[in-house]
Image (cartoon, rainbow, N blue to C red; front, side, top):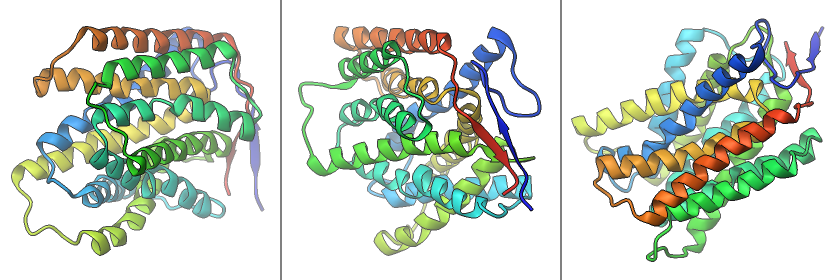
Length: 319
């Protein structure tokens, strides 16, 4: 027998059993969710300074599988029923396909190009929300998303930016896959009694199992890993993956999809700051202006999104 309960969220949807209430609860959800893309913004610096070169599949696998196994040992719960195939779909979208496409794009594109292409995620989420959830975002929110992409372009693109068709295709595909995962995650909710940590564990393990054979076939195992490499993998596995995706999945069920995806603008913003602080990269006037535009778009988008109640249904099911 299958028991299904349909929850109808208000302007600030919250997971059972303890909903977040009022502006303070909504602000807390936004801040916690923003930690995820902010931590992802540090991945570029970590990759450049700590990880072995020319090992995109190894980086993807070691980012997903160890973190997933650690979380799975902690939650001690496996999917049941429909959640086996739902986990397979979401794990592939979020990790099994997204990670290798992301690292492939990063290997062929300058960071600015990749960041600008990735910043179209709010627009992709808006499209999938309209098609799948029948919840089109307000035009003003779409305007904020477009402005955010423009700000990221100012912040990251340089005169030396080059067009690599394969890199562009990989980054746009990765962005679309993650956007679809956000919307499907909102539509499917989570099993009764499961937590965002549980969802992160399941999806990371499945995504890692998809990535492992591809890594062995394409790159093989490294001869050695230095202490610096291990520190880098530990950081992106624990902070940039296990903790970050747990907070991201929490945000999926508490925030409207477009509102959540606008937070992804924090990724290139943090990447720019990290490059300036850690890598001694110059911060030009156009970059500073782009940072201000992206930050303004992020704040404006969240303010405008809060004025339009999100009416999508979310199911918490035992299946």
